[in-house]
Amino acid sequence: MVQAYILIQTEVGRAAAVASDVAGIDGVTRAEDVTGPYDVIVHVDRNDDADLSDAVTAVRKVPGITRTLTCPVVGSPA
Image (cartoon, rainbow, N blue to C red; front, side, top):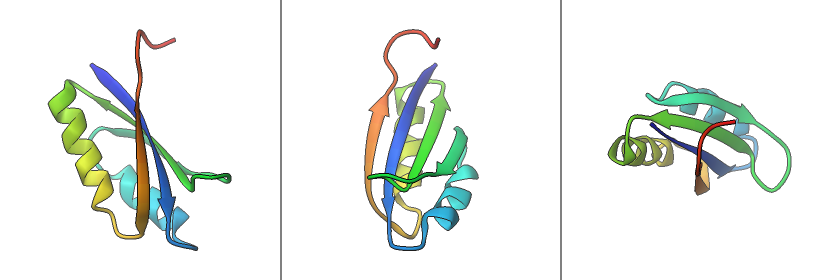
């Protein structure tokens, strides 16, 4: 099992819509709009690296996203 956090910057006023759209992607366990340098934070949980790559690609295709940063989780979950 592999996990990652995807930090997303969106077009102005699109954070809530992007979070809602991203939440429906297979493997996304949580998607929340937040304040700070990023507008949405997403947690992805997949079976392997290929599945994780597919989920990240699907997230990047959501309209309203301007930039993403993927942070894979290393080690065992706490």
